[in-house]
Amino acid sequence: MFVANVLMFVANVLMCVANVLMFVANVLMFVANVLMFVANVLMFVANVLMFVANVLMCVANDLMCVANVLMFVANDLMFVANVLMFVANVLMFVANVLMCVANDLMFVANVLMFVANVLMFVANVLMCVANDLMFVANVLMFVANDLMFVANVLMFVANVLMFVVSEQLSSLTISHSTVALQPRGLINRGNWCYINGVSFI
Image 1 (cartoon, helix red, strand yellow):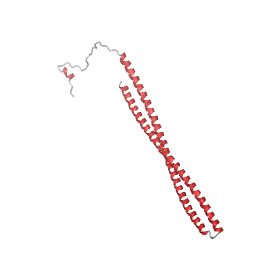
Image 2 (cartoon, one colour):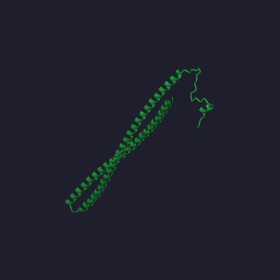
Image 3 (cartoon, one colour):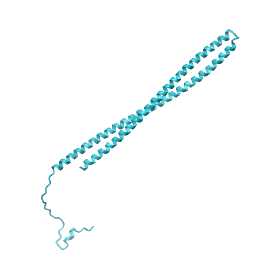
Image 4 (cartoon, one colour):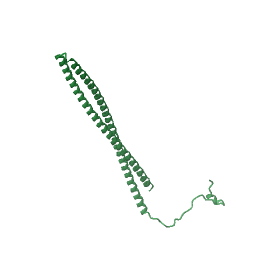
């Protein structure tokens, strides 16, 4: 009966440990889902920045084309007439301004592409961490299932022992007959016979 109670206690303790591990696994799964959500948000931001960078690159290319056209017009005007030199200089100035703007936009586009790459790297790292946490959560859930299985086995053993003890107790017959007891000990035939029952402690 004592062994059954001990096994029941161990089974309850293992069930508590399994429940704690299941709780930890659920928390880790929640953290992994949050990290996956953050990673998806960062991926979305990175894609938006890539789209903005591509738009700026297209605008820069258009401005470069416009600048080249203006340079070509300016050269043609210089070749046609010296009178149009002022107009050609103005057009060259505008072309240079557009070139500067295009260079600035290309620099901004490169910076945005770098930021997008960094965010994609961070998103990949977070996805790796989330996958590791999900793996740990799965391992903990597996351990919790094993502990619950052991607890169930111990509870089954405890139930079997309780059944055996109950069968033994139910089949026990008590004899109410008187038993003749014969005293044992030293034999002292003198007047000091009481000395056999005296404790000297």
